[in-house]
Image 1: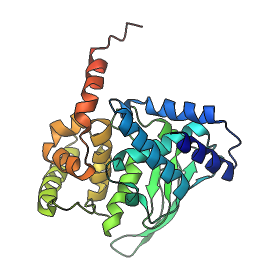
Image 2: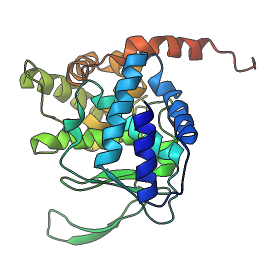
Image 3: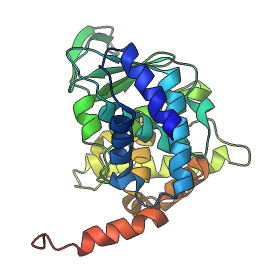
Image 4: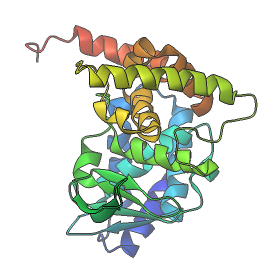
Length: 273
């Protein structure tokens, strides 16, 4: 893993983060791997994540804007969390684009959209992340810090899931499936789950899954990818057919390795120090 830390060090100097020692980088990597998100991974799997994060740090330009401060801890957090979805897919899944733009907190892009009647509206909505087809990926550092705690929220995984979705052209919640996977089976699982979820949201039902998933099939895929890695117990219970398709696509099964963590959390007495 020293190569990972040294690579990150050289990248940090390119964007003017200031010097950092190998020990500081090692501390940043170790701290990130201690997040609940990585609970239960073997040493071999952690080493693979570090190799993928190394490639990511070499291939992508990390660009802080609007006063964002990018330190070793945050860089390691982004690189390693982004590496988790492709741990068994390989780095080519993230090739074809070059930049990660980093804001200190939620950002508000100013855009014009045309409605169905041809009327142009100026839209300003705060965002925690964004992925552009063929272009950069954008993240809020405040939201990166809130990710990785197995609470169903992960802006890094969400936006990188969009990048995976984009690899087969349309951004529609259908990534390029592996040989042996069935598009019909994927569509059947996701269409049924999406229709059920939208009905629940329209009915005002309070659920464990973020209602933002009802925005579109693409957002449904990205949000459910967050739950696959952060709260697989929730996804497996609500939409087991979707969980099975994601298990096949990501070539991982997070629930068995995270189950002991969830059990510990459930049995933990808040009054006990």
